[in-house]
Structure formats: C-alpha cells, structure tokens
Length: 269
Image (cartoon, rainbow, N blue to C red; front, side):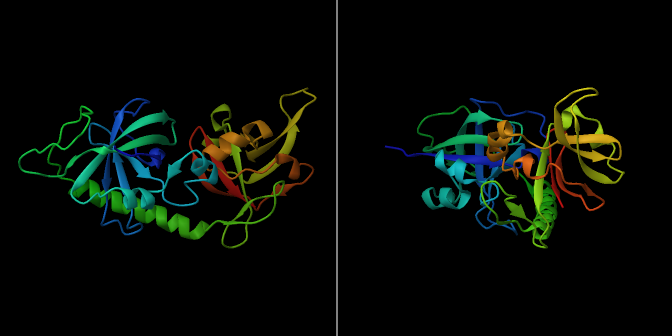
C-alpha cells in the first residue's frame, strides 16, 4: 500500500512559466540539497521542466488552516519520502494563481539523471525521465532565493494581538495589514506619491464607505471585509477587520512591504 501525502506549493508569482499548471496536471518534485536558505527545500517543476515554485516549509507559507486541511511541510514530506537520487510526481488537486495543492503518492517516482532510463513508477503518470542540465537555472534560482531571504529578514513577522486586533508586526514593530482588489484600481501603477489610508464613499454620491489605500489621489486597493477573511487566510495574507482602522487617519508613514500585481499588497504602519 502506497501512502499519499498532501502539500502546498508557493512562490508561483516569482516564477513565470510558459506552460501554466492546471488542476489535474502532474508536477515533478525534486529536493534541492544545495539551497542556501532551506536545506529541506523541494522544488516543483511542470511537465516541461519549468520551475513553478517550492513546497511550503514555514508557518508563513503553510498556515494552520492549510495544516487542518491535511497539508504537510517540505521537511515533513522529506521525512516520509527518500528523495536521494529520486524525483517524485504529484497530482494537482487545486490550482490558484498564487499557490497549488498537491497529492503525492509515494509509489510515483523515478531516478534522477540515470544514463539508462530506469523507471520505478508504480502507476505511470505520463512524464518521461530525462537527464537535465540545470546549472544556469540553479544559479538564477539562488539569486532569487537570496533576494527573498533578504526581504524576509527585514520583515521577520511574529504573532501579536487577538481575534479582532492587528495580528502581525514586522521586526521593528510596524503593524502589517493587507489590501486586496488591486486589479480594480489604478493606484498600483501610480506608486510614486505619498501613501495614505482613507475612508471614503465607494463611489461619488454613495452612502456606503470603504477603507482604501491611496497613492496620492489614486486608489491602490481596499482593505478586506469579513467576506474576504477566508481568501486572506488561504493565501497567507495578513488579515485585520477594517473596522479597527475606520475613523483614524494614516498619512506619510505607510510602507508597502509586498505587492502582487493585480492581486494584493501588504503594508505596514
């Protein structure tokens, strides 16, 4: 009997591929033993051998909600599967623009870089074994990982507060919030102005108001409502009920910590 493990793949926004991975596709999992940041790093490639992302391996990328749904970390996956000289194949059970969810069957694998192809796949998944020369990809990937590590070291997020309070801060005490819906506004293309958090009518003459992040006079995004809470949790985006910010004014000390074009941004105040 072969065990099946579930895991989450992150970093998709940092790896633009020509062949997007969709639900039902198979991907290739390879351990990166030379990764300078994470010794348990597991790379994920599509069938065309384009680097898609990495198996989540931190509390930031693998939330408690993800774990409750059965997903395990890269370290745990390596503890269950022997990646030495092998690559494993995973089936995509859910595909989003920012992450993937996989099922990895311990019986679906093949040897890496064998001069004579030797298949050891219990249930063929239709992916051929080939010898892959990855030196240039590895070099570029190391540069990207190093830059990501530098950003992470500046942000060092820790948990504070309660259910209805801001839940995350940076290492220097700045409070993190998120804004969503960037594709609906022009502000992400006009980030050269002073940033501010403003409560204003949803449209001219409207009775209802919302809380917006603005760059000068341009709206960048809107602070997520209760309805967007699950979206934030699923995508590891800092969530705070915007009611805690209403009635307050923040200008001149708002910083964008992370931005995913047309999706969301993480700010600190």
